[in-house]
Length: 70
Image 1 (cartoon, rainbow, N blue to C red):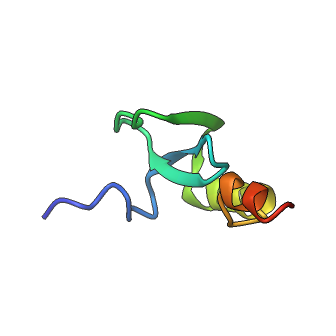
Image 2 (image 1 turned 180 degrees about the horizontal axis):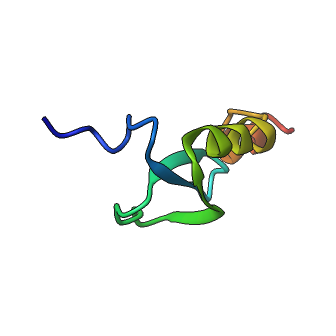
């Protein structure tokens, strides 16, 4: 049975971010979607999750923050 690459704890991942500042854990070997930029090179799932936790501290999209004046 094939493992879902997005749920593979032993897989290799990168971190992507979009223009709204939202981050995504992305499996290596799967084409990154349009509108998303690589912000952290390949690492373990844990390493990439720690990067996201440390760097994506405000989960609101940038446009929502701007609309609220903040």
